[in-house]
Length: 185
Image (cartoon, rainbow, N blue to C red; front, side, top):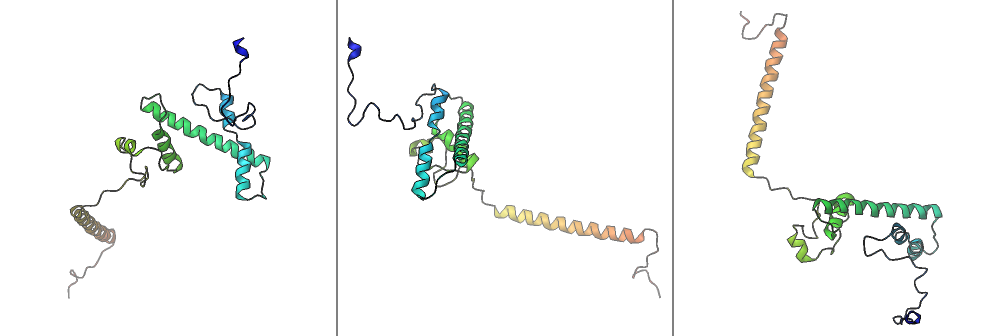
């Protein structure tokens, strides 16, 4: 009866330890949906977080439910978008850079220290101080600026010429116009 033997537990753990605590997220992707749902519903932790801020406040059950729904929707959106990025890279593995890009692009959240320095420089990502979405505009060339000023000036000049020509034609349309040069004494 080898099955009657009990394996010793590591020090500090009892057989009933951790039964009331929320389960950690699954390591593999083949975990059931109920396991994932349990990992995303930390009711007690949410209350503890609020009590750490101010002990006299507590959540209304509807507010707690709303916050949990928002958190699960957020996680679902991030995982879906990051999965699409990984699929676009033709990879079957979700990498930290996929999550980092998704959070920066969709939510404006930048994660410092997610990628090691060697991976960040090799993958073409910007340093952590710069946002992924902000791109530096190239410096304007002084020659280009001069040409643009000349173009604006010439357009303004032709526009005023056309306006003056149009004004002269409008005054000649049907009535006799006396011009200063044509007046004789």
